[in-house]
Length: 298
Image (cartoon, rainbow, N blue to C red; front, side, top):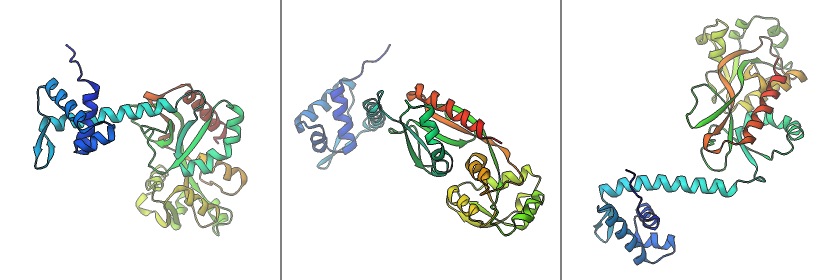
C-alpha cells in the first residue's frame, strides 16, 4: 500500500531547517515567522511519529531519522528545482543549448554554422564550450557533443554520429615534411611528437594499430588542449595526432597533411541527450551532424 506524503509545507520547512541548521534562517529564507517553521516541524514529526531534531546547546541537531530525511529531501527538492528551471526556460522560442569541447567547436563546428543555419533555419542553437566540465544532466544544457567509448550512461539517449578516426598530421612548414611524407609510419619513432595532456592515449593507441611499440615513442612539446596542439602542428612545430574531422578543413586547404591516413578507435563521436529532456530538436540536429560528418569523411 502506498504511503501518503507529509504536507508539502512541512517538508519545505524541514528541508530548509536541515540545510541551514537553523530555524531562524529557514524562516527568513521561506519568508515566514520562526513560529510558523516550528509548527511545521512539529506537524512533520507527528505525521512520521519520530523526532527529527534534538536540542544541542543553544541550537539544534538532526537525529539519525532527521539525517535520513535530510538527504532524501535535499535530493528531491534539488531535482524539483532543476526540472522547474528547465520548464520555465523551455518553449518554442527557447534555444537548444549544445555543449562541446573548445577544440571541436573552433575547428569543426564554427566553420559549418552557416550551413547548419541554412539547412535548419528553425533550430535556435546556442553553443557552450568546455573541456571535460560539461554535463547535460545539469540545467542549462540540452545536449553534449562528445568523443567517447561505450558503454553509455543509462540516463542518456545517445545518437551515434561517426566512428572516431585518428592519425598523425604535419604541416608543409615542418622541416622534415618531404622526408616523412615518403617514409613508413615507424619513421615517427625518430621524431619528438607533439601531444596533449587531455588525450594521453592517442599516440599509444595509434602505435598499437601500426604494430609499433608504444614504449618506443618519443614525446616533445605537450599542450593542455587539442586545439593548441593542432595550432602548433599548423605552425610547423612538429607532428601531432588528431581526430579526422578536426583536421579535415586543414587537409583540404593544404595546411596539414596526413601521410599515414587515419585508423579507427573504440570511441565514437556522439550526441548525448538526457532522456528526461529528449525532444525533436535533438533528433533533427543528430541527423544533420551525421550527414555532415559522412560528407566530410575521406
